[in-house]
Length: 138
Image (tube, rainbow, N blue to C red; front, side):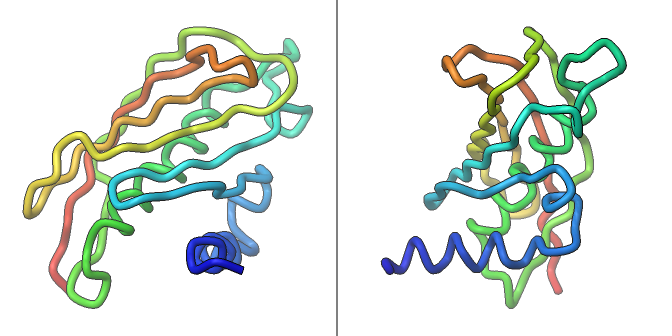
């Protein structure tokens, strides 16, 4: 197993007994300034009319947005707190998987702005989200 695969496995293992597990969110890739996760679209995340609930989409996006900053800081010296979140839902989804990719678009000393793009299996943009993270000294 590569170092990257070990880190991904560790990241996913941290999410036992959390919302990630409930929503079946899995981290699949990361880099210095980005993180990727997937979530199945099924009855667990439907709204009453049988399409993906926007709140579930936002949960996936938040689940990617904060750890994107965590991966980019010294975790022994700093912690991360999300302070503002917004989402624009652009398309509905009935089945398959959605993938969220968080990327830091502003990396200041105390504030990170993370853009999270959520796409469907065909690569179509489902939601465009923005998370502001506060970088807090421990």
